[in-house]
Amino acid sequence: MGWRCAWRCCTCWLEGTVSRLLIKHGRVVDPTQRLDEGLWVLVVDGKVARLAERIDDRDAEVLDATGLVVAPGFVDVHTHLREPGFEYKETVATGSAAAVAGGFTAVFAMANTDPVADTAGTVEQVWRLGHEAGLVDVQPVGAVTIGLGGQQLAELGAMATSAAQVRVFSDDGRCVHDAVIMRRALEYVKAFDGVVAQHAQEPRLTEDAQMNESALSGVLGLRGWPAVAEEAIIARDVLLAEHVGSRLHVCHVSTAGSVDIIRAAKARGVDVTAEVTPHHLLLTEENVASYDPVFKVNPPLRGVADVEALRAGLADGTIDAVATDHAPHPVEDKDCEWSAASMGMLGLETALGVVVEAMVETGLLDWAGVADRMSVRPARIGRLDGHGRPVAVGEPANLVLVDPARPTTVDPHALQSRSHNTPYAGRTLPVTVVATFLRGRATVLGGAVVGAAVDA
Ligand SMILES: [Zn+2]
Image (cartoon, rainbow, N blue to C red):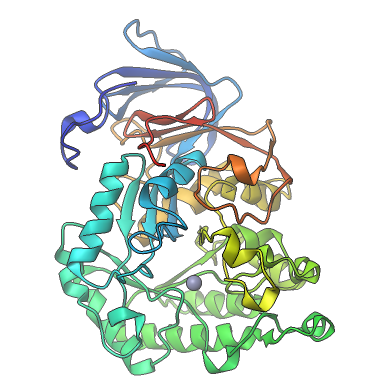
């Protein structure tokens, strides 16, 4: 369907599609963020050209979307694509395939690669790899400190003005725990409307921590990871952001106390945003009782009351976005004893299904809310143009088509990711991503990835 730009440059008009596509009978999340039954969408040259109750266009390829939700493509503000350096876990190409299979049209690639993405050269390399894969817009995240070392600020300005135009900076995987470094980073990113995305984990309070600190961690004999280790950093950073008048983003919020701190900060007018992962919306520390390291993740799975608070926070907008924290690991890093296993789990391909189960089926969010938390707001947090836009005339046709009535059973070996560490193996999630379009070009059709780069 359509052309691929032979030069793979970012501005070429051929990069989209020169064909016409008519999506008919869909349930469109419209510009007012309502769900409009039976609206037809005409896409011409990669943009939404017309929306109407019926459109006749003989030249258009027709896609019957009866019963399907048509929403803006999802944006993941927190993904680990592992390249360069850890290609045995994931590559930009395999991670891009996983992203489109999950309905994403843009992902932010975290900086904890090897080398660390702490220079203009490395972020441009990741950005170019994304273009070569050609499935999803890969927006690199720049490291806050050199080598994620927490000691010395990285070249934030050089990354911001590079071809990759980095706006999100994070040492994710590690916390920027030095208050002076954090303050300087917050001050620095103001110059280019950037944001510091903090992995909130007080390092001393979490030394050798293995799971949520609770009665259960005592029973299981695993070193506890207290909620206060997250909350103390968020409280400090909110105050720092307020003090210097900068923008703060909090990665993977996992405790009820964190939600309270962010809610209070927003009420006071602090420019803070926050994300929650799908797994923290659905799974709990009870899963750890299996000692199956597939459930070992940073921050750890918490208690039921935390999950309820996270759901409520996402529903009322205290938490702005769902972000996957997609963290591929090979089997040898996960299929071992708990204490030796790596932290992290896959997320891109199951994110929507988990969000629908946790938020839509519980009545906490409607489909417009899903589009807002998985597309509109994450794009805004990352200042990513062309994504998170309403399905409206003139907007880029970055779209996802979802069958809300067709469940999917998760088969780890059928996933696009190079790794298989999904905590949902064998679990049936309530929806299916049927199609994904990047600027009008299909990246998923009939539930299958199309146009993926060949990858052995
Ligand atoms: Zn993190």
